[in-house]
Amino acid sequence: NRRDTTPHETPSMTSAARAALAAVVYVSEGRNAVVLDKIEAIARKASTTRPVALVNIFRDVEYNRTGFTFAGRDANDVTRSALEVASASLRVVDLREHAATHPRVGVVDHVSCHALDAGRRADAAELAREIGAGLGSFGVPVKLYGDAASDGVGLDEIRRRSGYFSGAASGTWRGEFVAERGFAFDYGPDVVPEREGLAMVGAVPWVCNYNVPLVFTFGVSMDAEQRLKRAMSFGRAVAKRVSQRGGGLQSVQSMALPHGDKVEVACNLLDVHVSSTEDVQRATENIVATIDVREFLGELGGVRVERGYVTNQTPESISAAIDAL
Image (tube, rainbow, N blue to C red; front, side, top):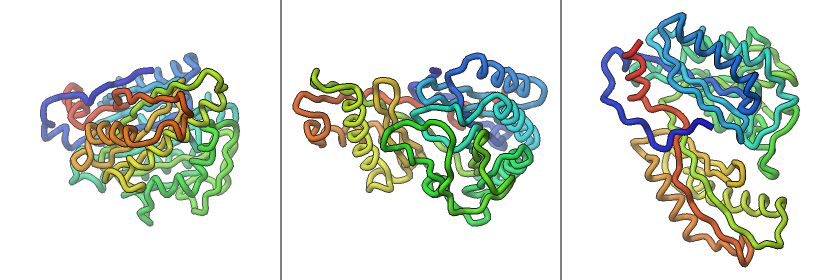
């Protein structure tokens, strides 16, 4: 896995870099090195043939998921780069054979588009629509969200309607995806293809992804299945209380996911000026300290909160990459 433990510290954004747009392409593959090397080669080529920075590649073996972040001043350049990675991924990844502990709805599961300058939010929305139209032309049903959507629907709402969390009870997602969607697609076919799945594409202000690992101990008599079940139950209780939806931190969305022998409280920070990574870390530690561990883990159970990590760059570090083009 490629992890950043703290947000990157860089100088303030220049006016030129502040005008940049970014697109993060999430692909449902993080384990097959041969396949990922092919996709990564396409991504790196895209960043060398046009003025676009490939500012981050985040491979996560446990989640079986990889994020590619492109940024540039010209929306067309960012669009073409994102679609080249998407096209390559659709050729070599089959959702029917995909297994993960991170929920997903498609091979190109999610594309989030962002303006580094709030004054370019309309441009980010148009970027999302262009990428969505491109994915639709590849035969992928696309649902827009945020600024790009005519109905303004949020990503979390689409995920709830699409059955994104349907594997949460077991903590695993395998095989074909069956939509429970209750919404119309904006691009592509009306029927979700089993091999490709669907894609969620949208435009929102920059989102910081911050994951806090929880490490558990159990009594020796408890089998692995029972340990995972109890750990996930505990993690979900923590994640609910951390999130705004559960009465926790403002502008924070969170869910509990298995990650190797740990459970992570995986958070989307919608505005780090409202709730920071330190706020999430502190809230997670405080919530864990107030929960009766024995109720979830048994008499001999215990839990330790590790230091969280971010999975992408910051607007400032993206700015530095843009200036270097």
